[in-house]
Amino acid sequence: MIRKKSGGDRVFDVINALVMAAVCIVIAYPLYYVFMASFTDPAIVNSGKLLLYPEHVFTGGYQKIFAYKPIWTGYWNTIKYTITGTLVAVAVTIPCAYALSRKDLAGRRIWNFLFTFTMFFNGGIIPLYLVINKLGIYNSIFAMILPGAVSAYNLIVCRSFYDSSIPDELVEASRLDGCTDFNIFFQIVIPVSSTIIAVMVLFYATSIWNSFMNALMFMGDQSKMPLQVILRNLILSNQASSVLSGGTEMIERQKLAEQLKYGVIVVSALPLLVLYPFVQKYFAKGVMIGAVKG
Image (cartoon, rainbow, N blue to C red):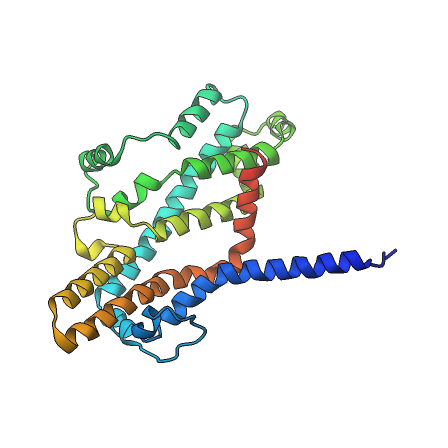
């Protein structure tokens, strides 16, 4: 039976749609503005006008970015670090989270406390640098992967998923059938973990793709720097050049330096923006998993 909507219901629906449309515009316009500004003459951008389309197309920033050879090396390094780091992080986080979710784990409360403690307190940058140096992995791919191999927040999200998705009765029945802990994990837990694995892949991949400080602290070779550091160096070098120039050349270099800021954002974020619509549902599931039981 379909209930006919009253006048009040229709008014509510209209107001609700208008509010949601306004919220979407507020959220989406900054992204649109950055994209339009990357193609627009910096003089127009700096005037503070509302950008709906590029009034005067200026592509000098993109020409400079794509002509900068280290960009492609940085892209390759970032892809390499992201893929390898995500595989390592997921391979470590999933088993650890499942173990912490089991009530028969010896010292379960202590282990959970120690992992949670690291969300509020850590050793700091200098001790971390000394550890990386002593391990002999400075200026190697391991320096980009190992420090962030386990995120305490992601670990808690995974643990919450297993707390609510793997009942104790299922584990007990499996043990009665002769399954060992390894059999239970690989034959029962992993097959039902596709959602949380996808969530962890997305969370870790996004974090590693945007990683910046680890590269500055633990990588000394410029040829091994990720994309984010390469783009930062490009902006700084052009800003310095614009300051040291004079006359008409200074104006042109300042325009280029201004547009580079927007172009760099587009170049670094575009792969994730293209991928996000296809995996948005997994981000939503990951947020809900962490919110329901923590």
